[in-house]
Length: 193
Image (cartoon, rainbow, N blue to C red; front, side, top):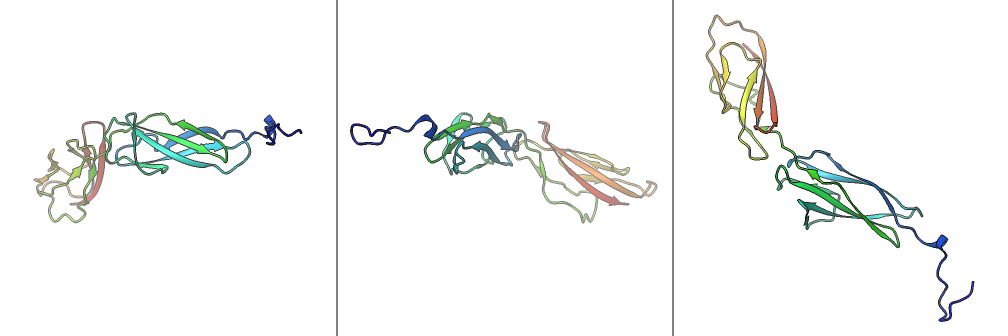
């Protein structure tokens, strides 16, 4: 090959050119995150010359960039149900950089969470069950599998008005804490009378 007039090396042929990395897919896990989740991005990328790739991450919520650590995970605790999250991934080899953006992922309703477990109830009557909802929704309670005379009010307090004529036995109370938006937490309590 001939040297260029200014003494520099001639330009490389097309066969010598370092090609851009190829981003095949961006997956976010879980696919239906709630505000209790920390989502994680999984990038499927390759380099035609088999060079080592480096990655950087830029997160956005509702289309607005969130400034913070350049990491493949993103905690959702401070965001709300209905917000959307996306990530732009920049992939670099020794000579090129490409970027790709995930689809938007909506933050879904989080299930209510029971606080503690009343496994050693001294008395059924008056035992209070508590649950909170990560989205701040009002929680109501429902119960199935109860013996005769045992009820649960909407605030989560058990009331027992059984009599000696009620059959005893083993029961499994299934208590649901519902948030009115399709979320429910479940607590099962074994009970022997």
